[in-house]
Image 1 (cartoon, one colour):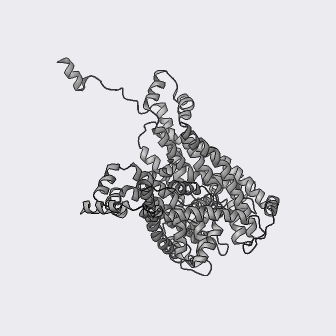
Image 2: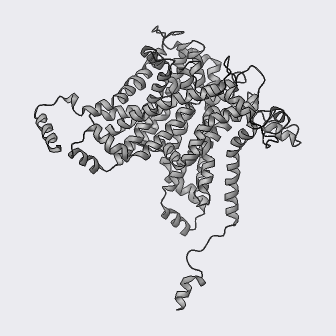
Image 3: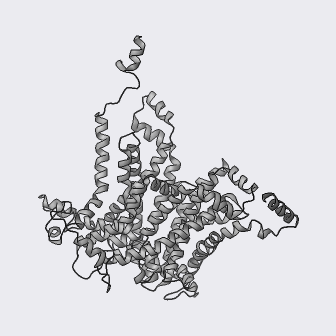
Length: 307
Length: 301
């Protein structure tokens, strides 16, 4: 039976096969991928970029106005606040996630007991949605019932800790929640990297009498460069998208003090009926990702080809 | 003779045991314990707040355990909490989420696994180009693509409905899942595939009779990844569905952050905990597989 089929195939192969139909099933199976890649990832992105140069308002129209939308965007205070917030949130969360993630991973890697229990506790926030995260921290940071009132209850009457109600520090209130949610994930990535370090390195360092902390800083961290780069890319691509957390925790308030670019885009597109602004703002978000991504792609893939 | 008794344990042998209560160890465990308490605190606060009555919350301490345990907030959050004019609680959102989740998970995994299999074993010319676009596409902020997708869905007649959202989840789940499956199938021994080819099995035959049964663990990993991801989604739910189809996260946000009425913090926390329960149960039940799932995104392809 099997032989007959193979023979049947080989007689078919005598005819010059139509190239398009070779390996047809695999091509059919890849149709969703091809459609997604071409129509959604390329098509929709190009569509948005093109329309960011038009004066679309309620409906997308191809009335080109050059860079007007971008000029207006960079003249809007709300956008500037969003960018500033994203920069503060981004830099702090990048540094803190890397430091906390690496420190926790290093602690867990010291061959301790109950490693699984600790890891389970440190990682569970990552399973929760940003909405849940935001709402819990909104409650904990509530000045009338949360941390502030508890500390005041201990007798420190003038203690003030109300980040969600103070426009100057509201972004740090969001940062606390963001770090709580995401640092466990970075820890897991780092732990996987630490487990990949050869045991011999540790032995050699111990023989040479190098203190543990020095081994980490001067030997292990430089060896883990690729892991750090991966973590960096993961954190930054998450930062640009930050949206739900702000919506749940503060809805952008007080006032516009905790607005972020993703929220600006959503509000302009679906609430303010100012599509052109939404398109211009989202194109700026794309641009920032591209600026971060290109050096990474160059390091990762450009280096591989040479080596 | 003396040597054997020494070996049997009267003399110390083997590596020197480390002291359990050295200063270093106390520091180590102390730090980890403190950090764990900080991480566990919000879950604890959610639980205790949701079990208190409102008078107790007004009096006191968010961290204190409830003096009188009441399950009323849970009942209220599930069946009575209001969003706008609807007062049938979070249960509506829960069932919406389930109705979105089941087809989205099945469809996205089916599409991505077949696609990953085609990329691993039946590579055709140009496949890598599309795959690279797909992976790079995962880094494009969703905000760039959401509006054109609204138009596409409207043209297809799917905008505002359940299937439109299912399609969106399938599309945006595709990069990571395809990568996951492609890597897994590539790592499988090639002899297996060749033997099946010699026996005359075709594309689908090999997939269903060999690849599928042999790769159940990776399907479980993909499922964990998708269930938590789709359940936790907010942005797509709020954009691509109508209010009566809102998933649980969107409804939760509407309940808690609605401005009208007296704030009932215990009901809010019960609702929050209810929404977080599905991913939490999956997380605690799946253990190492969850870690594998999220780490799959970190491994470069």
